[in-house]
Length: 267
Figure 1 (tube, one colour):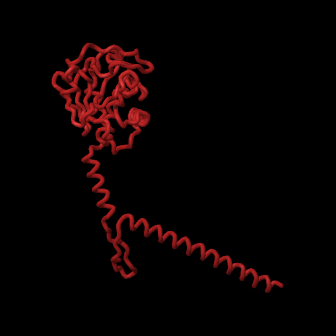
Figure 2 (figure 1 turned 135 degrees about the vertical axis):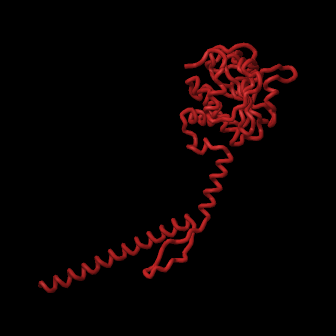
């Protein structure tokens, strides 16, 4: 399907992906000209763990903004900084893109990360979802998601996003496009995941009273956790299976003796 022109739909598709989206003031009017056919996404890191979205919006000394359309914080918050062309790709080359001319063909994402600290789950999975939402809107696969280092590594010596394995990342993006990532848990906030974890661990550790009563109606005082009951049931099943096999062997031996007695009586 693709798209020609500015990606004015960014806020809608990113929120539909379940992301926390902040629309910076004036983002719909910010950019360095208009997009042509949007080819895909270029992933970056900012070089600092706490780089603010305003730096991406307004630029730095020697390079005015817009520097990317999207800023991604470490807590997974997505800030839309602009909708027009941004100065993010620079000189480079990649199959399918015109050489040295990716700015008006790609959406840039700047993730607040120094490139050596690794990627926490909140930021990593938000990164995956941002890329997947854009690709799904454009009807593209994850092969349209590239790293700045893949575009500009040879010409500019770029190495961002640092410590991000792009093959694994693209696999996760493709899985997200196809809604295959981690089941329902990935749709929960970190707080909800922690609440679920605490509930599960509490229930697993709680020692439940046995409901067994003897023939006189006496209540068993046996208590155990869910895991304990499962293991005790498994032990009982194993014990019963040993008893059944032993009984089968005894029955076979008794049958053999009876057969021998009957054979003598018939002789």
